[in-house]
Image (cartoon, rainbow, N blue to C red; front, side, top):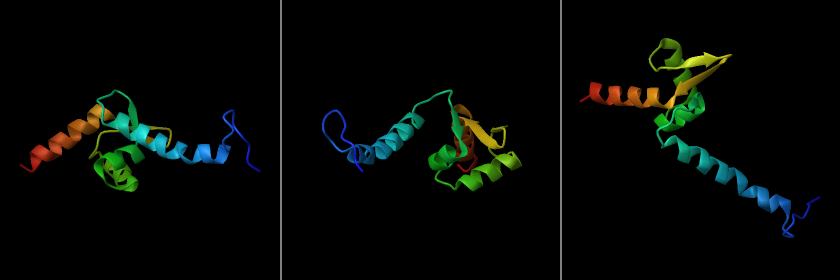
Length: 91
């Protein structure tokens, strides 16, 4: 059963675009320098590598991060420095 919202539109149609907008919004803020913490999924997306690889690198100390409970968290600035260092290493 579909419910109508205040404008008379089906609520299902309204929710169809919500995930796409949410993804665009979450990716857009990753391109901005920020002190926010990133998840391993976000770092994987930025580096175009698998989430599991990010976690393995963090376990080995190859990428700077820390655990909050059982989940890894990464500072945006630390990831930028990591990428810059890796790039300079290969020049």
